[in-house]
Image (cartoon, rainbow, N blue to C red):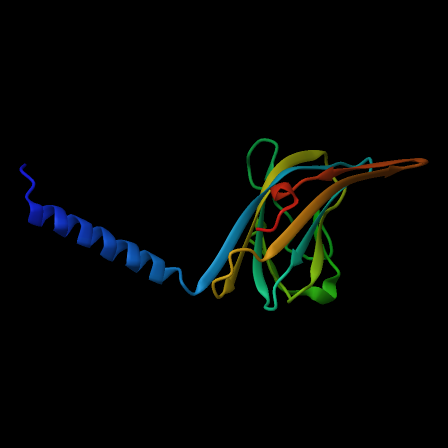
Length: 169
């Protein structure tokens, strides 16, 4: 195939047109994502807490996916206050669901912080992902931090889980 000056111009025009269309498609929906590098729970008192902060003036829609150590999605009982996955304070949570026991979905109000707790149960460790979306064009809307806590008898200890290097996402 021989390329002429006109065909190259047409190629650039089509590329520009497609790029503009893609940018327009995403113009009204800001979004972000970060990994939860690890969590641990077990019946001897290990809890994992993930703190999620909305740093904007608008509500944000949040989804959290958790994966067991074997790579399967963590299952729970579709309740924000019982089971292995819990949210608090409950007054700040709107529209909580665990879509079929897998993805936890909820809304965090403007400038609010909620905790996403993985309660003691059968031993489990794994990782997860946090996703948010919001109307508008914001590039960063959340700050998150995690910690694993173990309290048993007189021995208590905890360690930190860095989410997105402590930076907004």
